[in-house]
Length: 189
View 1 (cartoon, rainbow, N blue to C red):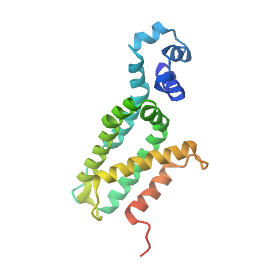
View 2 (tube, one colour):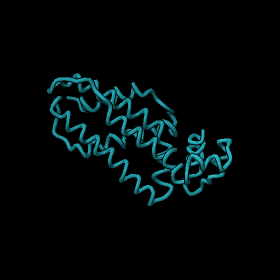
View 3 (cartoon, rainbow, N blue to C red):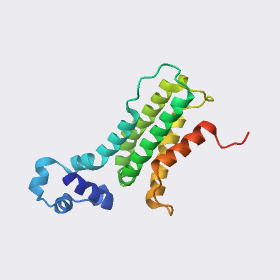
View 4 (tube, rainbow, N blue to C red):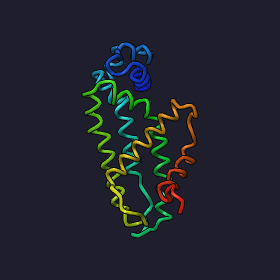
């Protein structure tokens, strides 16, 4: 209840514009009750905004996969990639409004969050990619660049779903299309 109210307030007014009192009112509690659970506005922000973003990214990177023998093959990796993209698109759809708040409301806070959480996500995806690189046929590519492309793509598709004229699209359908583009390319011949 308090976390949801805090998330709504931070999303609506940004970090600097959010007042703890407004969160308490939105949550239907008094200030004293709120401070029993959270010591500061910063702690509320971490719980309501930064935490869910970090958790979403971590759950994608640390998703447990069934054990497969080394050299599993392109078909298995293709299906895992669909699942990965689907997880990413769903998570990004949930956290895109929060990312706007955390990254752009305050430059220093945004820089710190980006370096601590987003760059960690890049590293996690690059590590995951390197760990499975021998399991499927592919051209050589830069895993670090790939990680940035994947996160950026997921974020922009989520923004498009929230703000674009097409509205939200089915994550599974998009994941299949993205995987097809990744594995098969768009060039003919």
